[in-house]
Image (cartoon, rainbow over all chains, first blue to last red; front, side):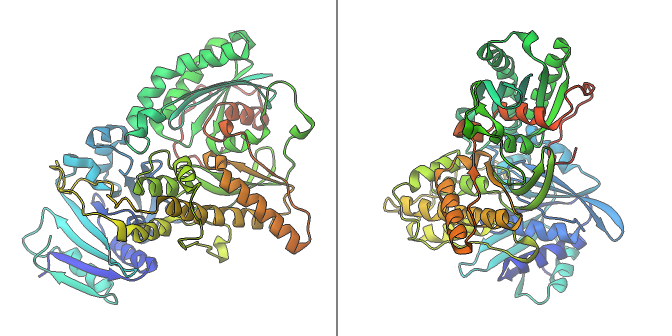
Length: 176
Length: 371
């Protein structure tokens, strides 16, 4: 059973489709970290997650405001998306000004964090991780895992894999 | 009527006195750019502390500069959003204090609206003939670090959103591009400087024209990827990562060979951004039957954008055999965040004898026209 799932998408729209599948299955109180270089597709994936959470309207990059809050409706119930971008921060010392602890403890929604490396050691103990890489030919490699890594498979990885069965996928036991 | 404006939504602490919504009596700004430069962006907690130190001296400077005492102030206007919550709070609370102490009305102003009203400002006390106020309807391109919006303004305080960015703001695209190329912060002026000797046609970068419902929408996120790919052949191996306190390696700016064609890259990148901005603005202006085109926001200070907008207007006018629509923009000092524009927006947009809004709170994500 896999502890990590790797998907390859070939267009931003496909990345959004994967994000939407993730947004449909992620439980509240989950923190999802999106780790990848400039232009790796973090905001695009976050737009998909928003779609899956039933957020209407555009989800813009939160780089300027650091945190955007969106109201979604999933399966008839309200759920919020807290979309954070730590790009502008110099280090974890700046996190107080963002309301970091409150976002990590948000019970009424899902917190998605771009540029999580800026949080240093202030990351939560448990989170879902998506690593995004440019494949060099226009595609994106998305690797999903859970931290702390679970001994057996995280069920959501299997669900996600079956939801987006159309995309080239690779399951791995060695990662995560 | 003298309005004292106060603006602290991002990284400038500003206060100004404007007479009758148009005449700038004083315009005081304490910039925090130096404070944030080492971080490549605005750091919220630093910004709030900076505002707190600067706000009282800046307001005093505005009053002294205007040559009026405190009793010469007829109303106090303040930006209550959108912006950074901690920063907005400093300005809003200072404005409450001043208005309460002076016994004058407190007028909340939307920051985006304020940027548009920078086009109503004239320096000094005497308006020249060319200083007629902009004619309605006006199509406004608002471009800054946090915003890229096309807005139709049919009258004072009457707005319709024609389109906006679907992902990154134009100023953000400049900031991130400049950071990638090692050009510094703020990115817009840095890219413009570096682009001066560059060939904008050397590297074909993508333009997201969009369509359908997004005819007047923008998308700049693909541009970052394209820039990164163009620079890949010049990249040097990353140095060994610094000891990290977290599970991820510290993000470091890339290192490039010295023959990286920075000027051509900056020029091509800038061209890709302003091409879409100018083309869509001109299209929107003709589609809406605008009598004026207004530029606003920090990116409006970009000379290449202004030139392209003028050229695009002439081209459209010649091919369509229609008269060109006058394009206006504020002087550079009034394009970036300032308080004179806040005072102007308050004068035109509000009932100045309304009850004081002592319960005024900040609205970090305030959309235009939501009040």
